[in-house]
Image (cartoon, rainbow, N blue to C red; front, top):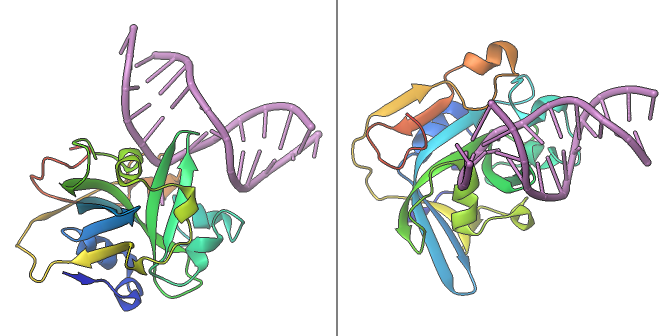
Length: 183
DNA sequence: AGGATGATATCC
DNA sequence: GATATCATCCTC
């Protein structure tokens, strides 16, 4: 297992999203290491993508999305849950990949299906917004060799407001994996 | 089908 | 300063 470097994220967002499937998200706090395999993601392409938060431009909230790749963008949704993204593409682009579901590997509860539960299970909250995802205690690691999997492509969840962008197939998941949040 | 619950953007 | 809107999840 090796920690994915910033260069990994500084590419086409849809490609990064698909390449993250099968990688392991790791978060260690107070000596407790939590880990899960990423099985479902969504790509948010940048300022022109009406479904992306960055479509509003650079604000206090979205500023991190316009920063350098390989950093975490964490926000509070519906007052209760957190969602975690990884910033992609070169600095200033405003693109990110949302982590939607994990397959538990270490110190995780059974249900990690859905972005809100992923953050709850991993102990991720707004304090990690803007955190470097290439650090020892918080990173994504790639397996030495990835087993062959079929990647399914579907429209994104919960973005019906985004006009023509609502139907774009920018949600990716591992076919047949029981930890995917929705069929 | 609807409620929880708070930050944010976008108005006045 | 007020309000409408959420990249969700749980319970009824």
